[in-house]
Image (cartoon, one colour):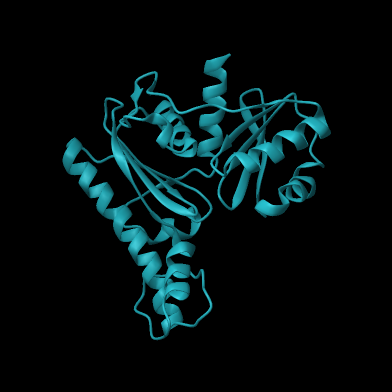
Amino acid sequence: MSLLLDIGNSSVNWAMEEGAQLIIDGAFRYDKNNFDKSLQDNLLSLQKPTQVLVANVAGNKVFGSLEAWVKQQWQLECWQPSVSERFNQLKNSYINTQEMGIDRWLAMVAAWEKYQTALCIVGCGTAVTIDSIDSLGNHLGGYIIPGIELMQQALITKTECINVSTDKHASIDYAQSTQAAINNGAFFAATAMIDRAVKHLSVESGAFPKCVIFGGMAEAINPLLQEQFEHEPNLVLGGLFIAHKASS
């Protein structure tokens, strides 16, 4: 039984895998300064895994804490993949592949292996990421913008006259207060860019792409989109499992 971990900038998505199936899963937010406690509180009760597979974009400090904790609790080493120039028919467009976040790459690997058609893949976490793939598996490129919370915080912390608390109510309606305007404006900006990216890829590829969305804010953003997206919360973990299997 494998433990799969997708460590983002503010939360961890995890699952236990057995027989190529994710049998249980969950997610939790964490404090970078006390990562050990977050692991203790959320993972210690799990059955001891035979291996620990990790996709980490939170930096070396967090990974070091994880590695030490896993070794202490389960006497195991952590395995993590790296971004590559290609995976089967999927071809990375980045000149320097190590500039790409491993979560984006694994999400593309999982989506391409499942659908093998033109794809628009959207990650909704601390940042909103959009990646476009044509029907031949060529990654055309992508976009990164601040996520909902970062957009809201930027306005509140970088302006003198806006002094409101943040909100996470998913809406793109007209707002009648500053708090609602900041909230709805962030959702409008994110959804408008995602919808535009889908249309742009449709024109470029000559066919409507399969649209897939994942990440902590995906469930909130998805209903606001004009196009139909498949919500796949464990997309990165699926790519992590595929990458590990291919390396064995």
